[in-house]
Length: 241
Image (spheres, rainbow, N blue to C red):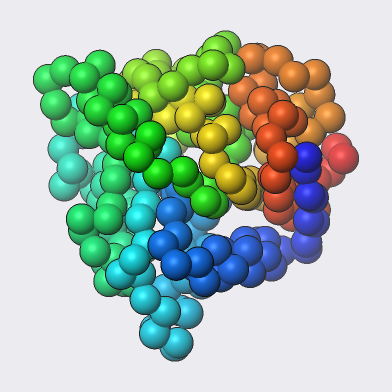
């Protein structure tokens, strides 16, 4: 079931996401599923501002990230471990022991996938934050990913690598070709999901997610089967709705 919110700016999109996040943080032991990329940055900035202004504590919050590149050292400036610490964790004094990301640095990525899925099974994610790719991917679940997939190694499509090249000096050759990602079935276990999308380049994917057929060619369309999904859009991303 989709609850669709359309606003006229990215800042308002982020404010709507933060409104839902604030309610989740009132729980005794919140469990958050977090995403990287440009879509959630505004939400994270509002979480940081709230922490600084109101002293909101994250001592009892547990986080699980959607994905991580394979082959980048954690200290690499484009690893998702670095992204999350620079853009959120360090600023909200997040206890390091409560942070979970897939390990893309090891010699056995398959074992890392199994280990991460085991970590996910310990707690249910209360609120999962998602962006959506221009081809309909969520996490790094590219078109064609089985709906019953758990944490797995994902080969990134050329389109996704082109989209992400802007973070690698616009050089696609620097973008990793594989990642570890929560699977679609892993994501669907969350109690509540927020999808953030802005920009005209996301309009087709948003339409496919909400109104298109449920098909593995649009991985986000699996969310049609979830009971509690809030989709927060600017007007351009909502253009086809």
